[in-house]
Length: 420
Image 1: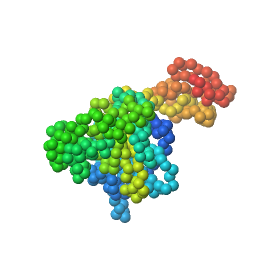
Image 2: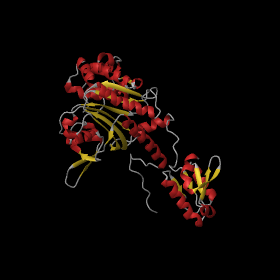
Image 3: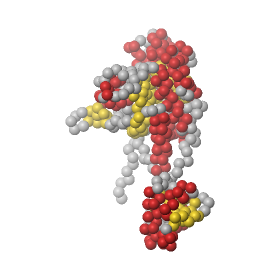
Image 4: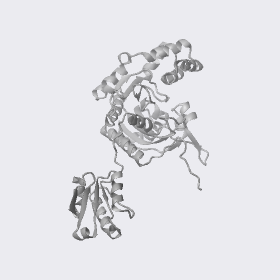
């Protein structure tokens, strides 16, 4: 017996029913992006490892990146994120690009993490970025794109929140409790881990990072504050602009949001369910130096990335996945017998030429079996063309739900199916 192969750990098979959900989800992402005037781009799946080492952060490069060496000895990576690729592409043609840039992409990423609920090693990610404007209003536009997407897939502000913060404000607060730039990274990592660990384990991890007990308490007090929009001019302006753009109901300030990637320089945000039962559904922020780091001129940017895994889980748990058809076909053209096949094939071709999807039944099954097949795939209409009907240039069109039948000229089949 031949061996049975399993998918690689952390990857997923997409059978047609799962693929239909993925297509629906990606369509909502594309439609939302285009609604705001964003254009689609794509980059390579393989990049030089040093592209991520430049600014993404040590943990991502050393622990989470799928690394390989080509035959020339160069270290490469399966892309774990897309923003460094975006920065590289912009830097390469920076002078010829009309700014501001509004770009989006949907494609696969890879991270070597421990697979668990809401986390896989291969996943798809929607990225939306605005490059050029250096303003909280630009940040608000990116937040508004996320909010519009949530509306499109049926998630209300009671079911999803976009939690915003500003790293510049966080740095000022950390300096006020005695944490300087030399330990800023350790403090940010501590803030990022705070809601992921039990309190005692979190304090132990702070101590292991070189933070004193007083500094840890100061971080806890900072994270718990609710007055960021009043005390930070940029946060206040972002919240106001998001409200003007119709996204205000989704937005709230949360000082526990700092994001783990090193290239963020200002606004940061994450979208989560209110009880934080799941990992972040979407996350992003402002990066003002990344294009410069990869060889271009300084160009500010803000954007987000949304993975498909957690959003899929949340939508399923909340019953938001629509009842998607099992087949794109509006009609099944039945094959009554061997003699009828050419007539059925010509009828299917006529239907398709009018822009309507039609399946031509394959195989020699009885008509009852073909009707059962159409019902199982929820194809609403079945078309029959026997020899007598073919001689008269007509076909029978039957609605499966009502069993209503009509005799229709072959030339009018497409319109009859549309009206059925």
